[in-house]
Image (cartoon, rainbow, N blue to C red; front, side, top):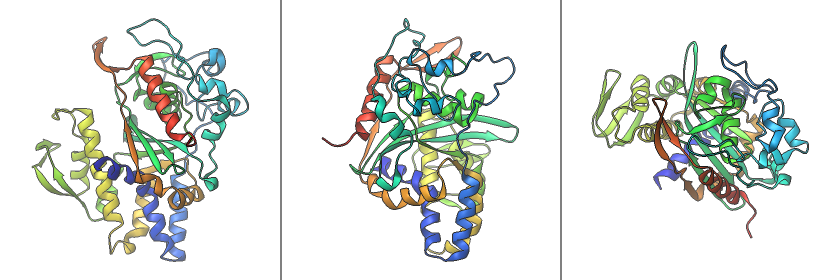
Length: 371
């Protein structure tokens, strides 16, 4: 139940303002439209320039089409996948081996003729789709890394959502770079486009949409709604000059950021930090939907547009809020099993090709038409 409530904030972060705006008249509708425009950020049509000294393929498309390797979302070769090279995406799990084994080919999990439909769903027809949520720890002058990667398979036809939290330290042969790194490094090297492509390679599924949240944006959002309440903090700790006792917490923006960022003193490590980030997002959504928030909506929308980026357009947000909310009634949480391993002095979460195939197949089955 707790995970299902946490999942709701993913759509609430965008939809709650839109639903309130719809009842408040022209000015707020205009504010929402402007905010949606500012939040809109399409996936790039070419891979971002790689930092100096980072070697990429001389022909980036070769990693997309050749040998049925992954076809990336938002990159130059993505259109080729939609125009008939869908088998490249379907064979995404045919990846180079992890450090603990020889090269291997993992069978495709999604039929080639379904790739374009999943990449470009018809929301009016309530087509199912995959959405990637990226929580980025980004500061001024530093693109940052995607420390939170949450993949959602949303299927309104079965009123269900499959949710997979991808460990930030998962070891993967990153697309374009073609070198093994932590999966959260993809965002640092190539932005949203490369992060999406990395998840597609990991699991062999085409991603239609993404929502990117900036951790720094917590401060402005939390302060704009008048602070947030954490109902039950189950770990007492200190971080960035703030103390967080057990039990109920009342947090302003800076406190919420410190609360959400703590990782090293948590016995659960990154998994614990991810849980606190979900708590804060849920608290923001609850406060935004509360009585008396209507007068704050213009300011909230402005803050939200700096906190969230997505390739969902305004009308697509509306269709999802109106037609997909029932899917939140049933949530299946998947887990990417692996093992901890130190390689070259760095900690990694190592996942076998067989496990990647298992999870990829489970995700695909969650969006397949009911028998």
